[in-house]
Image (cartoon, rainbow, N blue to C red; front, side):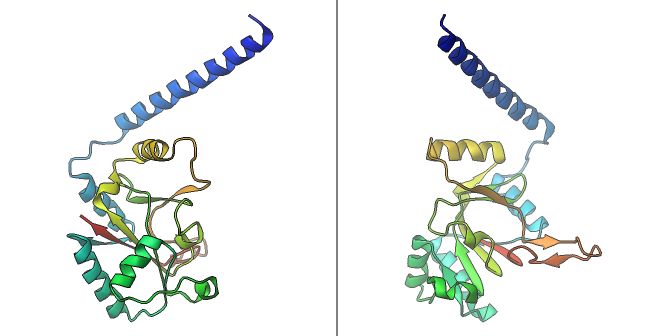
Length: 208
């Protein structure tokens, strides 16, 4: 065996060891966490609301539109911002005006995005930079509204990353992150402050 072949062989062994360790770590994690005895959708809602998030459960896309229109009207919101083309069409069909130009970005009262997946065990949202919304829309809006479907709920992060790997293959987005609740901090005199580093409110309109 040549020196080059020996080096390549050692690299392959290292890759194989990492795969085995990753698989073992996932198996151990499954053993540590208690079994989820309710549906993944119910578990996600339970965990999401426990950390201060709000879920608006909708029967279908029509119901989502009705409840979203009511929410905007009740909150008297006028400066809606959206970059996601699918959600833009949804808002247009509802005759809801929205902003989408950079010049209006800092004026927004509420921002709309989609997401990659929802994590049942932690009540977290997986987002990435691959969509129209990019990175900014997950951290800047005072009120962050996510439009999602129950089919996006997975049990845990391990399952979530498997799905993302399958979806994107070798072309993963430059940013994949999780959002767990609205932004908060208690660093100053242990006083809870909402919206310190991001949205004060995180709301999901979840289509069953």
